[in-house]
Image 1 (spheres, helix red, strand yellow):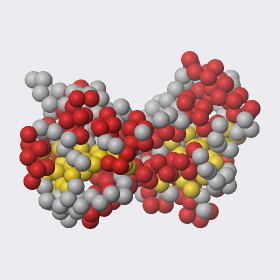
Image 2: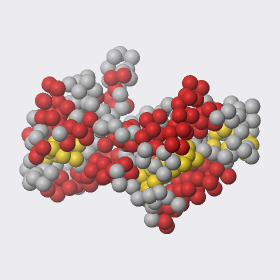
Image 3: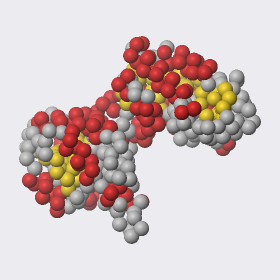
Image 4: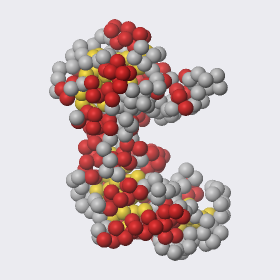
Length: 401
């Protein structure tokens, strides 16, 4: 939007779905920090800023007496953190669009902020309630969606509300804009070779992703637990490794489709295997794809790491979604760490564009302190995954239409 926003009330849907511990302390404020460029820009323009966000699923985790657990789900602690991060007054409305919200918004001075209580305290949020969305739309003259992490939800404050603003009075925030532009570099205009790295536990979680990426990629690297379903489909011994036996035919069809499209799929050639799912388990490194009958593969092995490294370093565009093993356990984190370091190396020293999308991949990048060494780290796990699957996001469609 290019309009003059001075003195205008601007509703901004942010994603403050941050982790809060049992003592009510935010343990990771990344999503709050990522919203600051948009907020600071609006402050500089003299806008009156109305922030909306959800936090968790409060209506599905009610206390024993049937009331909302406000210690766990109230955004008041987020308002406190925001006050520490911005150079302006931040007010908190303990209702969401009710009388207190209206009063605080009416008293806002230019450049000041009011954060409304958790949108999911209201049943109409997740139902995309039209009447409630319309009432919320009257709180501001402009609507900005900067909540990429919630853009795949057809909810009242992420999609429905946008339909009450014309195209000159709604738009994307700086974070949402960056998310969409960077994903577009993967989906529509990649410098080649384009390599997708996928991991995680289950093939079923990544079916649509793999099928869409086959039409776009030059290489697909598959690690994590999902790799063993592909091995089982080919008759390779996987021992006690994770396997979705009802997805064997699907795995073979993915391999066949990749072959027909001349897309190279890389699977592990050795594994770090254990006799149980435990960091203190007995460990062996297999010398081939086969896993012993009484063992389970929990990480990629050294030969696989070298193979995957070579592919990554020869790539010009890289997208990573899913870890290579059980990286939460130190004895099975090396594969994921080495892939993360190699992506950083390809980015910083070989000119590759790298996008990290998905909760576990982002957690891994942050765990190994490499977020500043890759091109872009997405804030939206489910949203980025759906975008890479080729789906339209309701929160994006509502702004564009």
